[in-house]
Image (cartoon, rainbow, N blue to C red; front, side, top):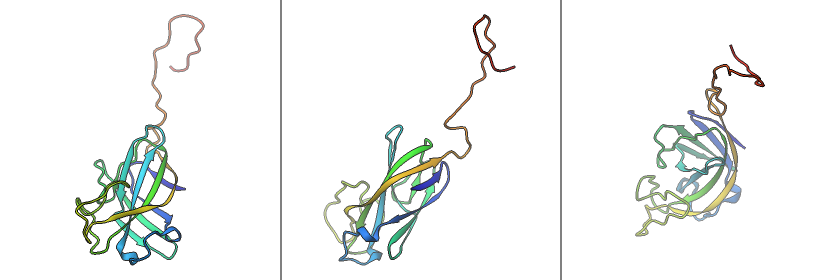
Length: 160
């Protein structure tokens, strides 16, 4: 399980190499597109990592927080706090890896045309799971409102 905190950058450590799809290219030609889906409101965000390091059996992907998410530079805004699902897709390039508009797919179904060595191709899903995004300030999930004392009977009143 991945853990993150709202309004904060975080690292993802996921097992990718055991499930690698395109073994015809070197690890330097592979990047991972991460899809985040919120359990509560079903909102979806995609992002490539700011930095990615592929080890023998797993991959470390660094994500940054931003108020304006961007799929290409690893900026995410995972809000509200709570449970999210993540899916990690393998994207491979034959030529130079360039993560920008027109050269990197933005969803798992995105097919870039015309096909070229500089355009990434989604190979498929390599891992998925659930993650918990904790509150940064502790006020996002539960908010209390002070009410006026009721005038009448049969009330339980807490307050001043």
